[in-house]
Image (tube, rainbow, N blue to C red; front, side, top):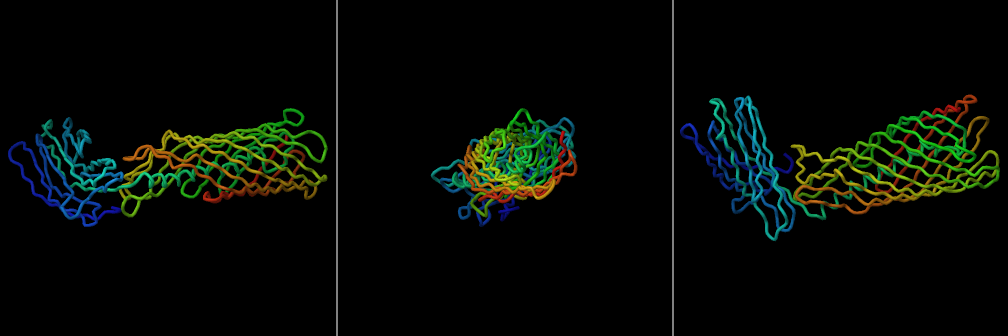
Length: 455
């Protein structure tokens, strides 16, 4: 087990008669690294028996303890084997201080191994806390002649941390959330034709991309002179440093391009984006020893609204450049997210992000140059520079409580290249490269194709 160096406490037990109270009095011997201890019990209880035990992890020299002025967790693993007839049951209670945790286990059980895990939170105090746990196992209500419970051992693990260390670990998740929000812009733009000419006829588009996986459809419909409605939906799957997102993205926008043939024309756009996502996050926190790497998976809803405006400059019939600025406001609401806690990598300060939210503000300036390369062939190159701000990730952390990692930010660049071919009067194929890169948020890139049908 990670972070464990185990010392053994060996005690012999005996029972007399049909029922008895089995006492244990473990010797106070613990691991010299002060992280763990084990009481090897080898206690057998029959119908009507009860177990009473005190496990004190302190021998006066070595201490499995939580130091002063930090948050701590003592976790015990009570291991054994149960054989219970149908209708029989036993109760198990583990107590540390005033925290008593009880569970009832019902039969039938056919020589089934069990591990009863109990985690005890330790609040910061002015003095160190050693572990002094009480255990009770009661078969008093059990009558089956073959019902029997064997308690093999109690293992103890300790970890401790500070509020500042937990806040720092949540900054990592806040950056991952900001990365998802920022990188998703590039894919959402494909659904509203941000990588092509701002004007065009009515059309339906099928699109797909690899690298960061995308598969979906989009459409454009001209509402009136200068006004068009754009939107679509796509399956998405991409990673960010330490995390990732997968799910369904939908986007819609209303765009205005000033009608006419002048060299300079105004352009404006308002839009919304919504994504139902499966989320993965990870973090590292100090635990008093080598540290813990924690991760998990959950669900969330990312929604945003934006306004975009600028000017379209067409110096000649073969070239046009669109200069725009965009302001976007978004929020990621986490539906359910509880970190994993595997036996091979215990996460004693597990974080629960369920019901939390993170707000994002993004500003960027962009230039898109479209050039006709020949009959029915054109190309658009795009470059945007921007900054994004997130309010930060928050979570309920076991033994610590509500924690917020604080604000995070990034400066990023978005870039793209699209080449299109007219294959007929109503069919067009585009190939594209799109990506975004930012400080702390890594790179999101994809290569793909679009198939347009005009109507």
